Image (tube, rainbow, N blue to C red; front, side, top):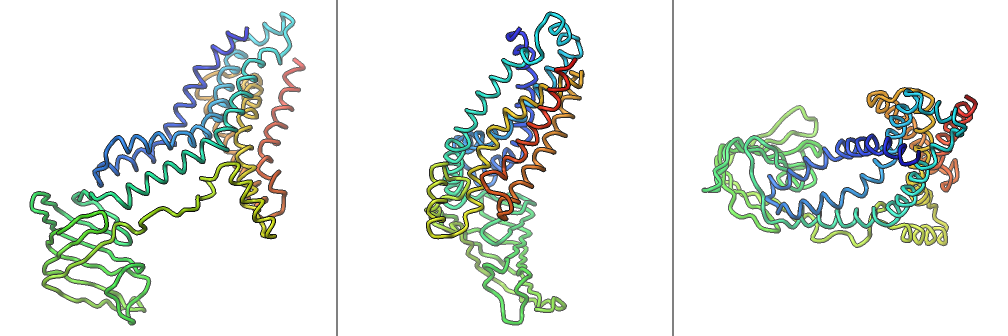
Length: 369
C-alpha cells in the first residue's frame, strides 16, 4: 500500500517542484544570460552562479511541491474511491498517509540543514563570484539600442562598430551620485544628459572605461526644473568607473550568515544590550520554513482526501491559494516579531501553527467517515 501511494505521489510532487523552481528561476536566468551577452563572461562562471542559486530556491519550492503533490495524489485516490476501499478493509485513514508523512519529516530535516548551513554558504559563494564578475570583469559588450548601466551612469547607443571602437547616436545619463559637471544652480535630483552623434571608446580595463565624444551637447536642469541649460562641445572625454569597490565587504549580510554565526551575533548584541529582533526573527524563520514542509505535507494530504478532486489544475489552484495564505501569515508574523510585539522565537512559526490547526481540523473530519 505504501509503495503504491508513494508511486502516486512522486510524479505530481516532481512536476510541481520542477514547475515552481523554473518560475522562480526565470528572472535569474535572464540576469545570468545578460552577463554573457553584455560582459562576455565565461559560461562556466555563469553556470557556477546558476548552481549556487539553486539551494535557496529549493528551500522554497520543496515545501510547495509537497503541498501540491499531496493534494493531487490524495485527491485522485479519494476521487477513485480507493481511500473508501481501504477504510472498508479496516484500514484507518492515517495509515495510507504514513509513508508520505515520513517523507515530509525527512525533507524537513534536510531543509533545516539547507536553511542554516548550505543556503547561507551558497548565498555567500554566489555574491562573491557575482561581485568579481560585475566589478572586476574587464570586458563590456556594447549593444545597439540597449541601455548599459555603469556605476551611476546609463549609456545608450543606436549603432556600434566594434572593429573601429566607434559608437553612434550616443546618449549618457549621469545621475547625481557621480555627475561631475554640475553647478550650484543645477538640480541635485535630475541627471545630466550628454548627447553626441558619435564617439569612440578608447580603453576598457578592469578599473574603467574611457569614452571620447565629438560635437555633442550637455544638458542640465536648474533647481526649479523649469529651465534647462545646454553646453556644446567639440570634444569631451568621460571616464566611467567600473570597479565601484575593489573588494566585497568583509562582513557577511544576514542571509549569508550560517545558523552558528547568527546565534553568535545575536548573543553579542544582547550582551551589549542592543535589540536583536531582526536577527532573532531571521534565525527562527529558517527553522519555520524548513518545517513548513511537514506542515504542508499534512495539510495537502487532508485537503486532497477531503476535496475528492485529483486533477492537476485543481491541485495547483488549491495549492496556490494555500501558499498565498501561508505567506501572508508568515509576513505578518515576521513584522510582529521585528517590532517586538510577539517574541522573535515564535513569530515566524505563526503560519505553521495555523496550517497545522487547519490540517488537524480536516483530519478529524475525514477520520469520521
